[in-house]
Image (cartoon, rainbow, N blue to C red):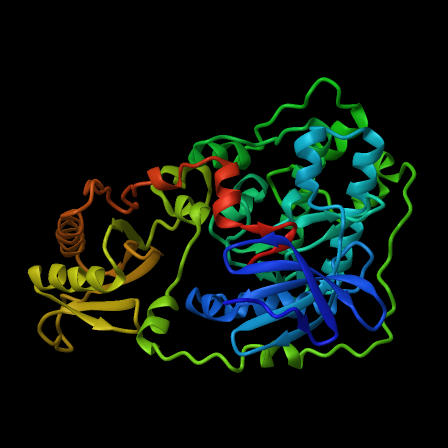
Amino acid sequence: MGYASKIGKYQLTRVIGEGTFAKVKLAVDTTNSKYVAIKIIDKQMVMESDLKYQVQREIRTMKLLHHPNIVRIHEVIGSKTKIYIAMEYVSGGQLSDKLSYEKKLSDQEARKLFQQLIDAVDYCHARGVYHRDLKPENLLLDGKGNLKVSDFGLSALRKPGDMLTTACGSPCYVAPELLANKGYDGAAADVWSCGVILFELLAGSLPFDDRNLLVLYKKISGAEYAFPPWFTEGQRKLISRILDPDPKRRIKIPEIVEDPWFQTDYVPSCGYICDEKIYLDDVSTAFDSVEDNDAERKMHKSSSFINAFQLIAMSHDLSGLFEGQDDEKQRTRLGSKHTVNETIKKIEAAAMGVSLSVERMNNFKMKIHPAQKMTRCCRSYYDLSAEVIEVAPTNCVVEISKSAGELRVYKEFCKSLSSLLTDKSELSSEMQESQSVDINTNDTQTSCEENNDNNNKEVHGYSSS
């Protein structure tokens, strides 16, 4: 299906980027002859991929932010099949492109970009916005070499101090506390990513990098990196305080701004006072004409998809990296190379095999009881539950939890289910008491570059959603 040559007051010209769900075209605002970037999103693909709310969140967030170092959204226009987002046109491309041919930047240029990045991130945090995916691919450069933060698709809006729980981002830039699969401070996580970016600007390489994600995350968790010999003492001190694996000890933005190296030639950039009224209604109405005729498929896609580093964080291989493991509640995780529905059927079959029955709580969570109804005086009380987490259409993780009941029954059920799930799988059914079984992580052991390409697709610096 072709694209219109004119949308509202915008005259579309050439394509300047393309991604999985979107194209980005250069356009001219006919009312003032200024260039804008029009991001054209395929509605149906977004809905089928269950990305509606992620796209809406990104648009709403960017419309509320008005800062010289943040890409500005002007308006959103919806048609029957497309969503058109009119954005500020940033002509210099991605910072990652600049790094690809310049390798490392001079002290002066790196400091200027880092100062602008910190000012933009500080502005976001003051308004309760946490980006959570800061990396050179999401930082654009204008014609004068000034930095612009883009792609707020993974951002979160919280009150300062509130803890976040969703693990997201790009492997090489993610903070260690996100790998622990617990609550974390969004501001501290963004600061860590800024520190990784500063290191990359000055070194021409990443502080943490490995093709094996397990090894990569171990390096991140222990802050295992080495400074190149040309780093100055001021650079080393600042980066060391940013890349502190303990988020409570990690330097905060006000302290970064006061750092002597940061203060050199520092010209603060402040948010604009926006006189225009901000309309958010167009964000919702842009999706209104989409009809979802396949309710069952929509329910299926509402399951909990997890990305590569979340899967690794759930793995037993990393359990020793983090403190505070839950020893009272026994938990086992099994890998399944089956669809969600097939996996649930195998759970029911495994339960039947050990005289248990399954009660569906929702599409993906189940309670497991004795096959016969319990009486009040029955001592054989079991508090077992199972949850199916979809990783890919034919790959799931089953998490089984036991809070009460006989360990023997729990182990028999897990062993039975493991045997059923490995009919077509190479996963080991070996189990350890009170700990997770290992899950196959071969598919996730890719390089950071591959993860950035596959899991965080970009369109010339404008998110392709």
